[in-house]
Image (cartoon, rainbow over all chains, first blue to last red; front, side, top):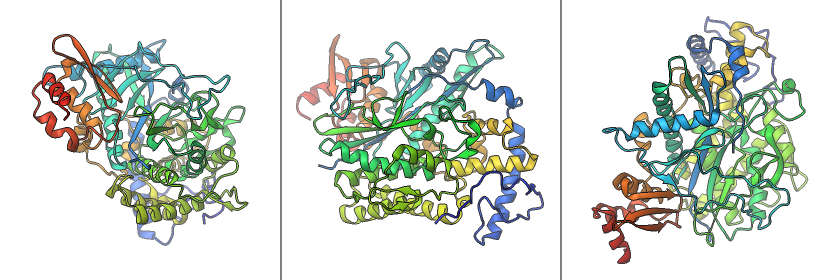
Length: 73
Length: 505
């Protein structure tokens, strides 16, 4: 059974992103004892976020506002 | 009689024309596709897109599977004047209202669908490159593989499954609905915010699917208004006495290959079981529309759904029951009608994804889109200390689906792959061997100048001078390499082909 509240939004606001590779217990997706894997994932996510920063649309507000798709199906 | 689950996916892509004051999505879509067709028609460009038109003779999107015509139902219209091409891989590439759309060729199993779905993306990427090469400096076409603009407008990723005409439609409705409501836990592409009419956007933070907010009915013919979970369009594109094509409009377009594989593979198994009436009648969701949204809005996957027998079960629990039935189906009936050996891989991954969802959803990063996307968005939010309503997060959500290789966020997330880039490139021009798409693709590759028009169930050739001759292809499982490979290999001309077919081959 899924745990109650596992995916609740906004629970992790106090948990700041850390670059030291030591991951706190993740409330959104509780780890199941796989600490090594968790650390690997955390590092991988950090690398990924570095990359993402480089390719993001520069004007997020304008980008989101202008993305309108009418008609279809 | 149960029939092989021949499959296909139609994807409508989001399109943006940048650098113009008043962008027109219809002309942008036409430009995108025409640029691709022109590039592929250049000398030395190889196979892919002969200038052959689509034949609308058998299109009847307003025919209702329930055998009635609902009063006030809006029959979808077909716009015949827009770009419509058929490719040598057996796919159809066209403008549908205000979107570019690509329908994969008919596939015999879920892995073949993954390959063709990826090939469709590759075709779109090539189309963007071709279009942007001819656009003035400062202009650009950008294509997105998603299903919502975040402002209440949705466009579809439809699945198609060949079914036995004799199966009572009501039985299909009951069991397919149960699957569609609950499979969202691994098929959802993820979305920030709520787009249900008259609801506040912030009512939902992040949800599993792009599409659930847009469904208002259980069963119906429409695809754009009052969307139904079960669409009744009765257009088999095959012998209508033997077959039905279940047209599924409720799913999301997936970027994760594993998600596409599971979406189509599990549904084919469920529908095969429906044909043989192997699913417990009691496994039915009481209020499907409300449940569809409840499942999509609950990231904890713990919402109890009311079932017909008075029980309550979560989506995961319902999926475990369907999986158990599917395992039993394979043991007793074999896999011949559900994709052969690939069906066993579907079962293996189905079990793994349910285990993962129960114990450690993050372990499904790179396999399930909503988990993959959410992890990226949450990671970004934490790193930059952003408010959940920050527009940068909505931009990330959209850009996850950007198909430009250098801008796609999904492409950077290291998702698990089931097919290689080389296989995908090949599949942009070569049809599957194990459905009638093989015959269509081979004819288009061999005799493009002799083909006047093509569609799903026939091709029109110009033979013996000016005479037009139609070859019907009413059996989706015939016209395979096994069936016609030798015949085609020994025909030099279209006239040879007709001579041999007339002789009864």
